[in-house]
Image 1: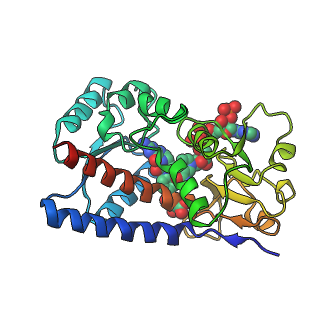
Image 2: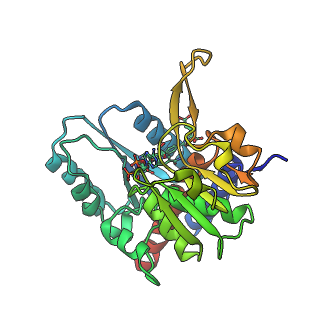
Length: 294
Ligand code: NAP
Ligand code: LUD
């Protein structure tokens, strides 16, 4: 038997439709639309692609986007000044500083400078702190982790009481997705590069979230039969038969895992489109909050 595909691309399109309807309603009542500012430093191809996709998604749902492209050698002070300007701009309800930043920039200082009310990535230390504590509500939940939970929920997968295994503990994916699963009453295991027996840990997982950035590292025979597999990894591997010279694969050996799992996300077309849909959702929420406060 082959796993049911969790179609992130289709689910994200449904969510964008919901957001577009809300934006239209709000514009009709208030005469204003939500605004997202994107800040891109340097010329990394992947970051350029993601930011372009985010701006395009904004346009599709009626959210205004304001792009700020800064040179690779921008100073920390110049970048902080851009963030300060966006914090003060009433047309901007969400600020996204695309990561990674160049090495000479202190990314923690930049993320901490973003107004909490506009931190649609949810990376502000206070947001992460609230996310990690019991019964504290963050203003925004980070987009990729939120997208993973949304995929489980919209696929009817029970979280409470089940064994969830997260591979990876990064600030942007592994750690926050682990916190969300814990708050939803999963029994949680977090694995990383020092985990002794990764296959044995993964075999316990009713729900597996893989976010390690290692192409097809998770093998089919690591998967518990019937498990839900959320593959966050987006890895480019050389492929001469592809016109681009590469193709994207996840952290999971998709074909082998599919034969064993109950549900599985593809790469591309799984978590990636959800990250962008959740960013739009957070921007809409920030806009609504600003209307309430006005
Ligand atoms: P990261 O910051 O590099 O973190 C990777 C994590 O995986 C670390 O915790 C690391 O352990 C662990 N790890 C690395 N090699 C391992 C191994 N051999 N065995 C066990 N654990 C290992 O990466 P990230 O930013 O979280 O991203 C992870 C992947 O998700 C990447 O492919 C990235 O492109 C993708 N991603 C996708 C989206 C999306 O929207 N779809 C969003 C963000 C990221 P240590 O902590 O011990 O070093
Ligand atoms: N920084 C992110 N850095 C990298 N893939 C993303 C991402 C869409 N501040 C900040 O957007 O949330 C962020 N906030 N991130 N990422 C990664 C991470 C950030 C990754 C993949 C995709 C966003 C995506 O849509 C497509 C897919 O998986 O189907 C494939 C896109 C392609 O290249 O064809």
